[in-house]
Image 1 (tube, rainbow, N blue to C red):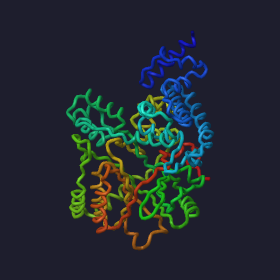
Image 2: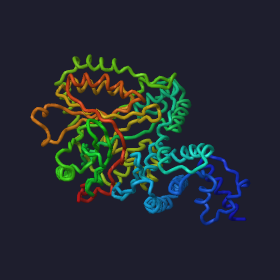
Image 3: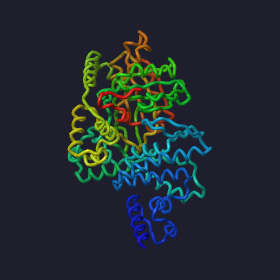
Image 4: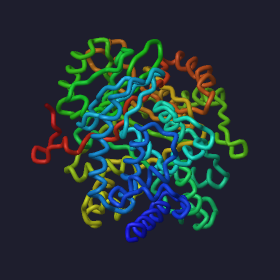
Amino acid sequence: MRDRETLTSLIEQVSKFLGVTYSFKTSKATRRISSEKGLTELFRTCFLPRILPKEIEEELTYFFLYKFYTWRDEHEKVEKVLENWSKLIKKLYQRCEDYDVGFEIHEGIEKLRIRFSSGTVYYPMLEILKIDSILEGKLLKILLETLYRSSKLLREKIKVEDFCGMLWETLKTPYNLSKNELRVLDVLIGNPRIKIEEISRLTRLSSSSVALILKRLEKGQAYTANSIIKFDKLGLKHVIVRIPSRKEPKFSHQLSRYLLSLQYVLGDREEHLASFVLPAKHIRSAKKLLINSFGKRIKIYEVENLQFSVCLDYYDCKSHKWKINYEKLVEKVEKQISRKRSKELEKEQKKETVVNENKFTFDRKDLKILRILIRNWRLSLRELSKIVKLSKSAVHKRVSKLEKQRVFEPIINVHRIGLTEDIALIVKSGNIAFLDSLTHVLKKLPRITIYKLREKKEERSKRSESKQQYLFWLTLPSGDTIKFLKNFPPIIERHGESEVFYRWHFYSWISFPDPELYLEKQKAWKWY
């Protein structure tokens, strides 16, 4: 009787956590659930659809346990779940013949990588946790809703690759912004630190309406509150490497631990773009390692400055589509070039460089806080203190110090609002006024990341020394890539030169180097 009462209570808790109702009385399956493995068996038997292969069923069960124990603040159990989950997936996936299995180093830990015949790449456990972070912890509920709908239509079990497709589709489901949601989100993008009362004043909506709209946008995963980290202030250097190779590159232990992202892109040739955050003191030895590993054909760029921009000016609330006039944007570039003065621009850029060189004293706990803020800087002090295991006052002091030193910059990123196409544009020009005008106009596009680059000295010719380079990562509405490429390359070619890349695959995306790599006593980063 006690076991039955305990099981009933557990079902109620799980139902509340998942946001679904379940009737204990009508299920015969629950009678077979033992008290010892109650939670695991309960989830599989009562809440998980029967259309999943064994591998995915095991993965989602561990993912559920991880989320459920986190929800109940049982942190010791969370760590145990992650440990067991990691051990299990190697046994599960290595036996299968439907895909190629390999290993890769992520944050100093060997992770399983699966490549399907279609070219899709999937990292068990890592991929799920990454997407859950992007969706602010909503992935499990979204997946279960999708699986419930699919189970009503499918009679046979799905494949692992089908599940991976389902996983990525969760990020593409469109969220249709209303007029008031657009107004609130636009103000928030302009000032991520703004308070509800101020948004209310600027939008002329009540504070309660603004609060409800923000909750609705968060629930719909329409935006996330992220941060840009100023790596120079941490004794690190952001480096981008172009590797002309169709095969996925393998990095040495030193380099892999500082890998930020790896992407497969298509342009004039097939190549990979690898992004590293390397210890500034070891930048030369890192470049030698890269050249020894991949030859002199690679191109190495140091990132001097990084900007991220989101603009909703061209979003139409009636049709829920983007209406961008690329011809007019090009005309704006032409008009602005004549107004810009190169000397004034050079002075501004020199000032920026001086500010970025300032450093400060930090430790591993500061790095742990930054690792969290880079994904969600709007967490409360209470939530932060629980994660980093420090008092609220201690966390407040550390966050205030990081803000004062401008180590991180809060940004608002948008998702699920019709932005599906990614392209990269490398522009090189000696006309500073043109580059400034182009940057200013491209910021009017929905989402863009701008990298100011400095090429490795040995690779620069005398002719190119006076030229500046920028990498523009653009995320455009569906079908707009052709429109963009029809209008912008001609004006770029008149004032400089450019290369275009189409992002084909993300192989990895790590938010920040492991804090354990920082040696507090020596005040330096590890380098083997």
